[in-house]
Image (tube, rainbow, N blue to C red; front, side, top):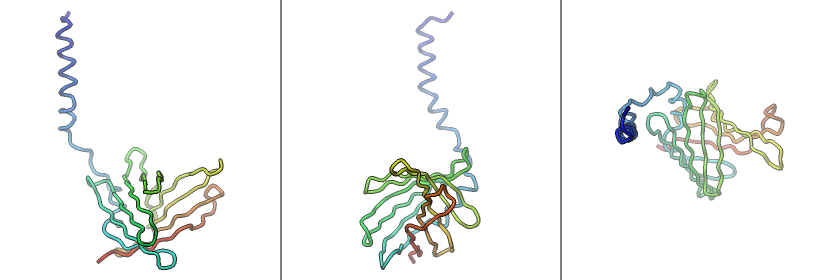
Length: 169
């Protein structure tokens, strides 16, 4: 039998050096789906409603995380950020949005048929409301983004807010 002080020493060494061993491991490979949001990268002018304008700055971190910085001014006072990442276990994109109005929204979805669609279920007055964001009509220098909702569990959708994006030169 080992004396107790040797057991304690061994446990301390394992605890102390385990993070070092873990830190030396290479990160997992970047899945090809991590490039599906690359169309969104860059600086954008955003237009919606009657002459309302804003901007969006979108970057990629660690080859796999998309960070959005939206500024609705001068069109509206909304300012927010989102983080999007492809979850290899779920095989879905996941996005979290937070803003200066105290909103926290979380979405999941994917890229299919030239459209990126992320959705969620919210509740208002105890009733589910399906919400989604759809990036479509995507070209290298422009795309359209829709905020849509469904009150019939996704059978039909209505556009609540549409933004036209053009790449800043």
